[in-house]
Length: 199
Image (cartoon, rainbow, N blue to C red):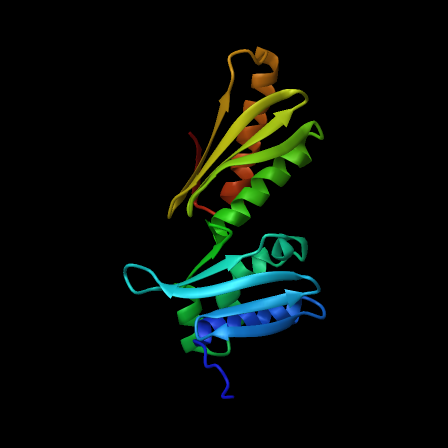
């Protein structure tokens, strides 16, 4: 049986990530699909063109292996890893990488926002996702016993964060959440964007 030939973008991304996950192996399903197998867990990769013909790699990582192995940053900067091959670097830089429905940068911003809240106060806890779009994610957190929603919109140059807090939440708690949100915004700006705003 002949070897399945895949695009350089898909093949390189799958190969680099497989090498970074100890004892994992690659299974090529078709020209456009691969699986990285890590024990009994699997990460699925599928490449397809978007409406403009640009490469899109859809990654399904239900067990969040990429996050637990601290590989999101590598995926985000995958084009930099291929610096010795300018043509491949350009192709990787132009490709859109979507992980579990989120653009890889939006996924990284989500994890950073959540972790920043955790770092500011141990009373914060992530509860659940409300909605996950390619460039936008909303989720529920708690501060002590008080629930509130966080909405992240990741634009090309600007990321905006906003909260939805019920009227029943005490004013003192709202003040803490808003103060912490401003600190989170400052961190997001320094890591990802030229500009970030509180929505």
